[in-house]
Image (cartoon, rainbow, N blue to C red; front, top):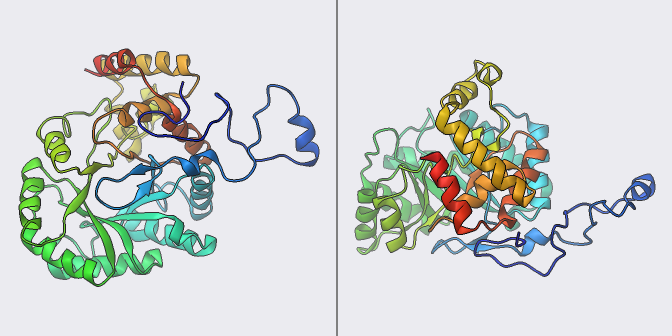
Length: 353
């Protein structure tokens, strides 16, 4: 396993070393065993691992922490612990949406940014278009949505504003981009992203940008080893031709690819349980077995292999991942350090077919 592989560079380090905080007192005595994790002094290795986010103008850790669970399944205190663990590992890119928990996710992230005083160190992204108070991407609602997000996030500017095309995928792009131009000129937004856009919509957006409108430089699309049809094909070709950076959401297929959920009776009756059950079939089982085998060979969790598979795909810069606990962050960030062979990539894709 090459440390921080798949197209990224990192400082020289001992292969297989685990990032850990220096111990002290009684903890230090227990950590002296030769097999104990090697303590890392100073900044974590992950802080020097950065990938260029296409033409958006940002260098990000190749794993964006999503806030979909904040304020819904994860309370404020745990959310802040998850955010802390992510940045301690070197992460610097956070993604949320104004519709997550009715805006509560943005509020939690805003409180964390303020309390930690690290806004300038974070690439902050949010998605608008589905908040019940400001639905859609019409000019008035779009401006109101951005202003509301800025207030909840306690910041003056959003680094990446994702436009949510909604279930129909229909948007009046010239109106959206004209409004976005005002938001960018006013310093409220720095770069534009899209969610739910078809290949045709991206082409239309690029044509409009040639007339002076701001460009869409980042794309969020549901994509993972089990769910490939949404991206592979025309959308990937267009994104590549336009140098649009892809930050795929649903990187773990609602948590299924973490390997922690293998029994329908344990999935529960919640919304998340119903999403998990949809993957608990023969195809899903084959995929988990393939993940298990590859993960065992690299000595990492299944979730890390799912992340590594995504990072090996063309145009993918930083998958968006959600976490329920700090230990989930520990599992996920290991995927940045895994370089899968061609045969392993093919094996995983074949199992998921």
